[in-house]
Length: 591
Image (cartoon, rainbow, N blue to C red; front, side, top):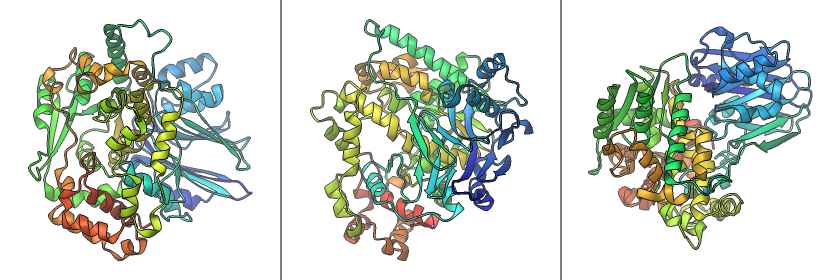
């Protein structure tokens, strides 16, 4: 888990060492243990390292092989690297380190770009072929590891964060009007290749891009599992599915214990994180470190779920850390949480994860987390209405979108009213082959797009801001492939995640299963009052905001007059949504 950066020149120029260094410096908190930079004429690579596997300097990056004439920078973890190493050794490859980075390099030499299909893990990497001048960029199947880039006729820069690209300089930082539509309509989900800035793009998940020395390039998607029964699934009973699922869950959790440092668990007290703890306990883990966070209540809404996390911690005898954050601390750390966002993300969970990660990083360097289960197993409230929907696109948009295009055009400033792109994006995605029913279409777009650019991005940004590696077993790609085959009605049962809950009953206490669904509560940011209202109002009425003119003045006045009266369908504050965007832009000094 690290930060990577690089620059590739196409027209006889030399890569800018200063630009690579600035990108690295911007990402120092992602990899505080070591740094390295390699300049080879037209190609420059940089790396900030968080030591998790092979703590020695033999796995320092950028990593070069003088025999294969390959260089690499890599962010993430390949959980099956030891098995791949053994396979490569039978092919005659020799290894000088004990880490997974070298395994990627030799796997690429052995199998070319198809090597990514053999990797179990999370990754974003760049490999430079010294002889051909070719550079290969790749991102894992769920985009757990980020990869941003900026293109110009003479060069391409890439980095693990958008602010890293901006720090290099010479990039268009004006607002992308299409990305603004996505941000405002799709609950801050901005799908690739867009970002909120015109000059910065991001690679899609499950994608490999091959960039030739002359700047021409090709991309291909290497993973796109179908949603629906497989060839051998028609006669499976519910018990069959449960047995397959329990086995896949055990494998996914066990894989993510691979590390040369201790691994803990972020324990919310919900079924997902509790199941991770239960499975690890069944595997013989003792003294497991677990961590929960809570906030002060606001507007009568409770700010913690300690009751349930304590139940699991006590049941399994974990080394539990209950972390309570007072409102004064929340307000003080809010600017840091916003600065840690690679892109503006409206969910309150961002601040919660930022503060949780701050505390957890004092104890441990790697944790498992329960993100992804709702998108993979149908846990959200908008999935049941999709079953049998006569107009799946409209049904999905009504449940998930914060507003429709007509409403958005009233709320945006005159220069930013530009149509209904997000709805058309969903319509096009739903029309793709490979998802047989309406529920499957919603699960596919949420796992392929929404999950990547909301929960997954949130976890990466906020944990890495404190040099903490988060691993997400529910996004094991083999587990996800199995989940995609399970009939939709089994996932929707029991109010959502039915089959996952039934499997969980075989492992953990039912008290954390048979309860209302919880969220990561940060009430102060849902009900904007007092100093939070002052913060947001100051940002939105600043000179910079007036010059941008993103929002209609009358709309802003309506929000200021009644901050708690304008809540989105996903229970978010409209005022926080527009205020967060302006706060982020000002934090980054862009736009």
